[in-house]
Length: 209
Image (cartoon, rainbow, N blue to C red; front, side):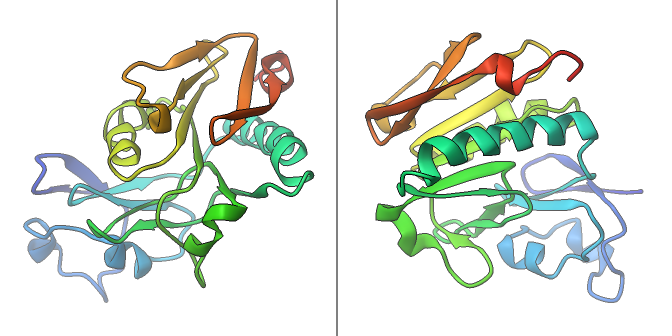
C-alpha cells in the first residue's frame, strides 16, 4: 500500500492505482481532481477527490449495504413512486465542476427540477439529497470533509446514517442549518422544504445490522 501526502496535508492510501497511468513521485505534489478519479482503475474501490486530496475506500461490508438497500427502498417509495425524481445508489459519481472535486455518495436523490445535473456517465452539480452511511474507515471524512464539501456546493440535505448509534443525522443546508437534526425514531423526508413522508428507523436498522 502506497501513501501520498497531498496539498491538504492528508496522508492518502493509494491502492494500486495503475502504474501505467500514474507517476507516484509526481502524484505526491499533485492536486487531485475529478479527472483523476475518472481514470482510476475499475478495481472495486471507491475513488474520490476532495480539496485536492485523493481518497480510496475499499468495498463496503454487508452490514453497510443492507442499510443502504433499506434506505433506498424507503426513499424510492416516498420520492420516486410519486414521481418526484430519482434515487440512485453507489457507485455513481458526483462532480462539482467549480472546484474540480468529485465523490461517490452512498445514496442520492435528484428532483425533477434539478434533473439537468444528470449527464452521461455521472452527475455535474449538487443533488437535492445525499446520504452517507458511516463505516469505521469513513466516519471522520463523512462528518468532516464531505460535510463541508456538500455544504459548500449547495446540497439541499445531507443525511449521515449511523449504524452503531442507530440514528440519522440530518443537515438541512438549504434551511441554513448550523447543527444537525438527530433522529432516533423516524426521519422526515422532504421535497425542498415540504415534508412528503417519513421513514421509521426500525425499518432501516433492524436487529443484527
